[in-house]
Image (cartoon, rainbow, N blue to C red; front, top):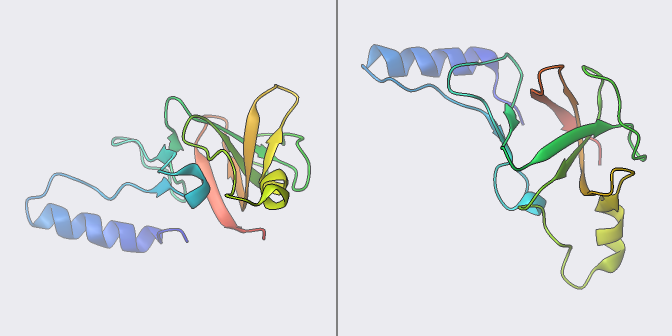
Length: 131
């Protein structure tokens, strides 16, 4: 789920009114990627975004059920590649083959089953589950 902008604003205002100097920063996390893989930059909030990928993690948005990348700001399936992506599901090669796929770029990509978009600056927008 995503954080409602109105709730973020209320919490940030509460923190500020109590002399706090931090803001809520959204990110993107899923079990198959072990840890968070994207985070909102400290100084650049974009409404509805879960942030930008970590420096050693790559994102692309593809047409669901394909490996074909879609243009910026177009909804599709969120795919992730990087060192924190799992090697596979334990003793379940069939399910592993459904979510880990080598694309034309030669990289192994995790097909998350999540619908989202990426803007022209690389900010990720989670929309909903596809699965």
